Each structure stands twice: as structure tokens, then as C-alpha cells.
Length: 61
Image (cartoon, rainbow, N blue to C red; front, side, top):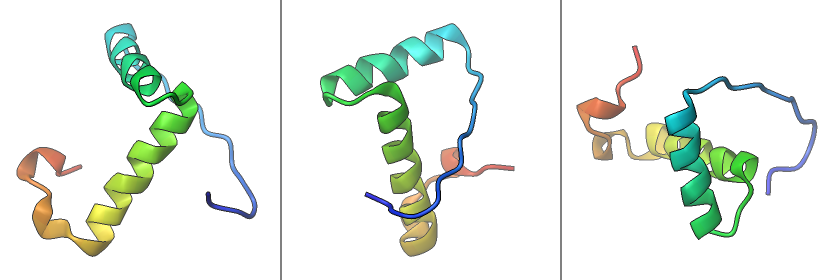
């Protein structure tokens, strides 16, 4: 877990996307916010350490 200061962030998403995220979080026995944090952590790790593993679908413009 990342320690230190924290910053709250609000994310607005379509209901269908939220339902998909919630379903995946439940499968992993995590809360929705905890699952979103893990997804972001893993995405950023790949961006910083293995960008070649990311396909064009991951490009954020």
C-alpha cells in the first residue's frame, strides 16, 4: 500500500461501466475504490516500466 499524504478524486462514469468495475471488484473481494486504485497503479507501472507491452488501445490522447 502506498503510504503518505492522500488526495481524494471523484470519477464520474457511465452506469454500465460502473457495474462492470463493481463486478470485477467483487470477484477480487475489493471495494470499488480499492479496485480502481489497483487498476490505476498497474496501468501506471506498465507506462513507466514496460510501455512496449501496452497496445494502441491504451494510448491516452
